[in-house]
Length: 59
Image 1 (cartoon, rainbow, N blue to C red):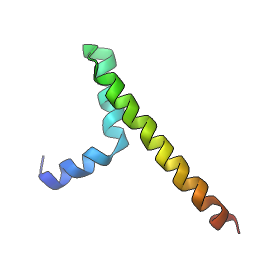
Image 2: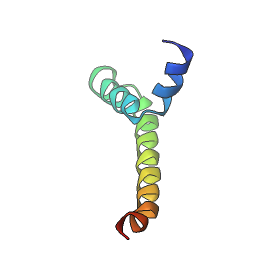
Image 3: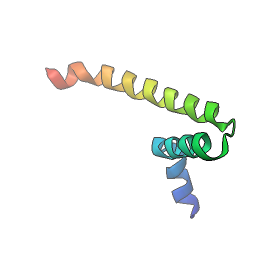
Image 4: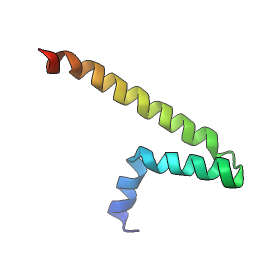
């Protein structure tokens, strides 16, 4: 994978969902906590941004 595409994949939450499911279903690896933590952080960031932008979009 080219370097620029690796950078995009690193910020894509879908990458961590796939890694989490693969780890949980296939290997049972402890990487589950890291992926779950990254996904929770993504949700918090997106919820904060959307809560900040919502009043601007409504009015």
